[in-house]
Length: 445
Image (cartoon, rainbow, N blue to C red; front, side, top):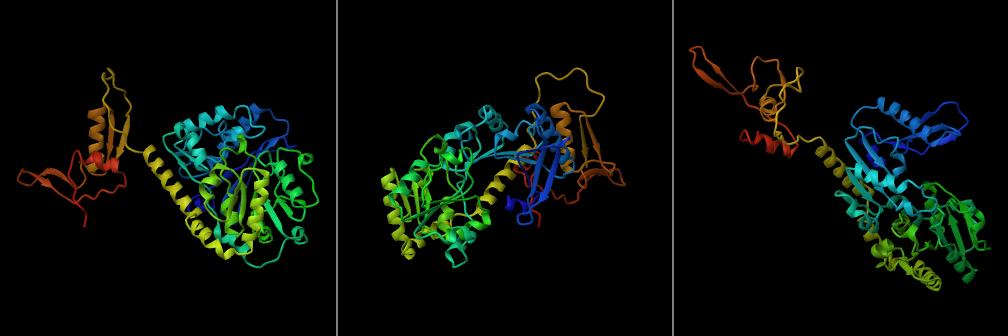
């Protein structure tokens, strides 16, 4: 979003928060670091689901009424669809990062809303190849975009620096994980590793979501440090010997493509993961990434990774070569090109198809007004009138059609061809192909 915000206005619409207020309102704040405007709907506490949708729609309409330029509707979740699908957009994007319906406590209407969103979308992006393969049959313009990485940001972890206070006193070796702690984490595996190697410090950075704090395994060498900001992550990684991805292998993780994999590697940490399909597929060939299919194998892979951490020069060149091909700039450029193409398709001139039966009564009003009776305008007007039975009004400041290229009678009354160079600009091949039916083209030089 930061990259898109560099050349267009980006508004990130958050999920609503509920407050003891009488009327709904929209909180807007600009993020100076990214250029993204964050919109947070504030909804009166106790509002019903139906009334909430009405309120959200009104807040969105009020916001869009103040905006200018074409609208792109970009969805990370189908749950935003009911209050926004009416908004006229030049392009609709569904950025599907996970199989959300497989997550714990998924809303009952999520599947039906996703089907509606996919049907409405011009483009579908997926957060990895596994998810792409699962959904490719659902849309004709779907594209996989595995996680990229801010290499420069995470590579600061390879340099000396101050450690965060809540981690600085923990003994080495340290093995760490950051991210949301929820049903996707194999808590039994975490406990097994902590018990198998009580001399290791296992650091867990991230909020606990959808599971209770009492479900977390508690060991003297297991340290839960809570959620941290994106900017703070390299400082924690700097103090780790090995980075962990102890994901459970279940329906919730079947299609994940963890963003943290390239981030861990950019920070210079060897990685140990369970058998997540996209991790195995894209990173399993690296010496720096150990894949384990059992608790014992996970501990063994951590032992190997600790040895690798002592000789980074043997594996980091291969890692850095792979990371060089990953770039959020490249991803953003590719996504923008696809959106531009979808926008062009949605606004392209459509072929004129004559109906079998013309209406017997022509309307009094004009169907189409063409402003400018130059070559393109006059040809379009003629085709609309003759080929589609449209009632066309042509407006031009000159008393004739065809711009600077037209026939007239000279002083002697002879019909002559008045010619002036006509330069036609378009970036649409559809328009060029259509007008080529009526003229030949010469390059303008």
